[in-house]
Amino acid sequence: MLKSLNKTKKNILLTSIVLFNKRGAFNVLNHEIAKASGISLSNFNYHFPTKKDLVISLCRHMRHVLNKKIAENKLLANDSSPLEVAKIYLEFENDFKFFYLDTHNILKSYKELEQEMEIQIFEAVKLIKNIIYIAVGKGEMMHGPGITENTYEQVSNQIWMTCHFWFAQSDFKKTKENIINGGLYACYSLLFPYLSDKGIKKYTAFLNNLKK
Image (spheres, rainbow, N blue to C red):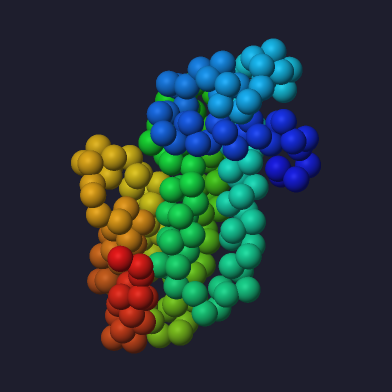
């Protein structure tokens, strides 16, 4: 998406992400973004007449980035795991933490984003569930009595919720550990009851290879 924008608009968006991540989307004023971008407020207003225009553009940029990250990893789908998918989401959310620290207020203030968020949630849960079924097929996760399609639907939703709200709860708790790694260990705990010995071996190896 950024490639299609002129230099000034791209600069404003990238500067906004930095400031929003530090202080929150509602705590940064337009003139502060303009100053940090090295432009006048009138120039800023030419590109983004309102804060709403800026936030909606940022969220569309986020969607583009996430879709690109997922597309780049689709070739690895048959050899990936739910933890690797969770890692993609957690790293993405770390880059745009302002949105995940304040999702409720952003969606409440900008109703236009609600439908896009619903679509993103549906696609995320679907992707996680598909990867889980691939893991079942490879013998890394179990199937059989007591484990139904609804079971893995619920697990997929729980992994999505863990990823989506991980930064908010970590910020509230003032967590000092590696936040992304912590989120991955939390996702592992959700998967663990359904892992085969093969899955446990593979997923613990994945976790042990994470950067400390």
